[in-house]
Length: 345
Ligand SMILES: [Zn+2]
Image (cartoon, rainbow, N blue to C red; front, side, top):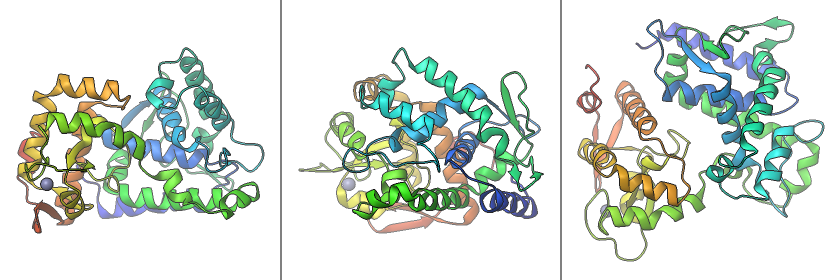
């Protein structure tokens, strides 16, 4: 069920009002919008188009978004993300990062539960209800400002708008977030010394990708996922659904490929024969993949990756976009991809 053009424009209008007219003393509202958009893609809405999201889930994903950003930017200093003192969640994450380097390890620490509990409180006290406040108006455009059974509920059609407009939401939020971090006087000196702030805040975790190469290459018997020819020397851990389309690293989304295949595919989705192999690999090699992702401490959830892939193919079909078949061949995506996900065409 795609929202009408009018509904999507109203949705974007509300988002712009929130970003332009709301007040921002920390970057929490940006992170919250990001989490709402991600969960809209990963979860299935109710029959009426509404989507229930528990405070617990929101808190965990909120922490995940900030995990990367709590790393030192330069000279062992973390970028500040609030106008006063450092945002409290970042301070807590910096302390945890001194003990463990990987997010999946942080989730196994005894203090994880209390971190989630404190983050739930933080959400309630700060961005969750304030998100909808612009000037002295309360928009309540995305969800009603109240908890029910420990959850909020995205209004009917809102998750569909987040899905349909994901790239636009993403761009607007990242730009506003970046601008706030860059303009805080306390960050200026640190940023002035160089470094790509946008890549630091929103880029993929390159070290995680490197850790995966051995395991993926083994599963692919030393060959490129796309062209099936041997990979001599170095190859590339490729995001099957490109990072620019969905910037969250989940294990099942990775394949190993030649540098040249990876760069020819670029930011496009792969053709249907590749899609078939990817779906099949994630089913038949499930146990091995789970082992690789656990050993490399990579977040993974096969079902979520499948949801994200289905959504991304749908986006390209709707836009009349191209997919990469192989080499320098491209074609328009028809409706055939739907049968792979058992979606009616
Ligand atoms: Zn190749």
